[in-house]
Amino acid sequence: MPPDMPPEVNELLDWFEIYYVHRKVIRRLRNGNVVHSEPLFPPSLWLVTENIEYTFPRTQNSVEAWHRRWETLVGRAHVGLFKIIKELQSEQHQIEIKV
Image 1 (cartoon, one colour):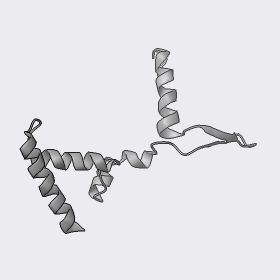
Image 2 (cartoon, one colour):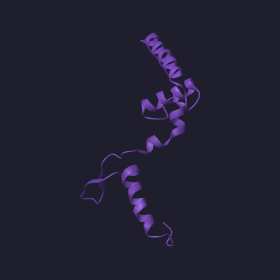
Image 3 (cartoon, one colour):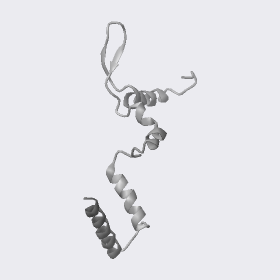
Image 4 (spheres, one colour):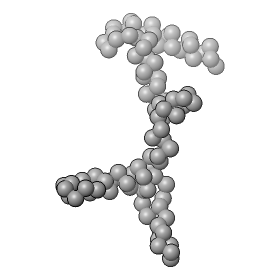
């Protein structure tokens, strides 16, 4: 890290290293190596283009995927009650067809 960086950056870098790169130290070996627990977000998850190429979902949350689909079906942010009921019935019908 460049010497002119403010000291507050160290705290951010430590956080990033703990949660994204190495996680926490489990033990130190006699030869000086350090064993870390698995990171919360391993670098393999960072390669979004590869995930898209293999058609993996862009999110881990299936509710987010459904919500995106729902926004596409409804087509706008504010809709009336009858439109919501009609779209829910349509969604139920689509799910029943799949099952």
